Image (cartoon, rainbow, N blue to C red; front, side, top):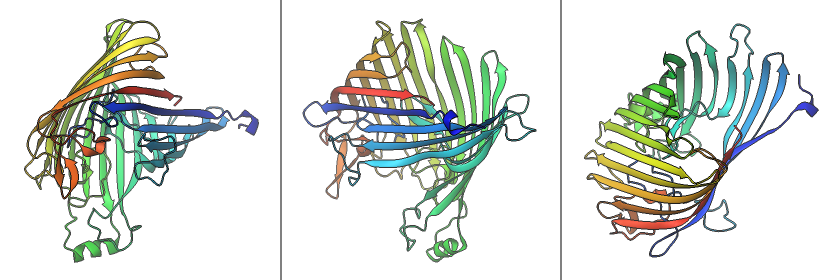
Length: 432
């Protein structure tokens, strides 16, 4: 058991912030294809974002430990020195608050029991910040149960959604509760340096009797769209040209497919989301010239086929080679391409095929060599080109057409087909 004097707090987190402008005037525009779940990040982030975490090991007796972790996130529009939380563009949120106990079951050595709100075994592509498998939230689970070949993990997580955007519920606090059951078998050795992870997620809206009655009264069919499942098969290869590679295939159905066109494995709060989704992706990091030139890369194809024709196909490809002049200074170039083919019922963006190509060059100063080394300070210039008008006007409001209006300031003209930005940014992560 640890005495108070023996507790050593752990400080961890992530942050990015900077300044940017758009050629022709105005603050930095961020270029994201309308209808795409993600955008390529380098020289293309328009906000200040931070996650600050505190944790500690609170108990240890032989191999049994109890640990606490917490994390608060903060995002601002990057407008001023003092940005109030009263502004809709600024927000603070509690992302993690949980306790984990390792080796608390005598018959399951190495397994961890946890409860609370947490990031749970998230899978993402760093280049475009695309989380393709993420059931994070309040929950409970037991993870990393040694089964001889790999390890099993089980979790139950929950997310609260609104009333499907219909405004039917008389009280804003009367939300839809979405439960997700997650089962994973990971660390399965299949080849030298390679392993498999297999997962199944089942999500369902947990409607109370009065909520069912309420929807019945308004003729809302919640028989299929309120539930869904997602299967994931992922192969991880280490020692891949000096780096690593991940290849994943996913299939999802109905209510587990989120409204923004993404599917991460958890319920969505939607009662009418019926359809299916296939996704294939590959991403990683390789060293083209050891200690001198490395490269991040990503390739994604996603086909979201919805019964109401609001789905779309998304193809995305990007590379980020980085040349290291020294242990501190490097030059990075990022080329990213996103193509959207919407179904006939797509709304909120250009209803014909459209695409965005983004090119960034950045001069960087970092704490060592490697594309994932931080902290980093960078100067950048970004050029983007797209087909069709950037935006359209609907009811006197700027709306998405080829570019997403929600990606940041919209300081290119409505009918522009390209744009140039420049600026500086810092990025840092540390600890857990």
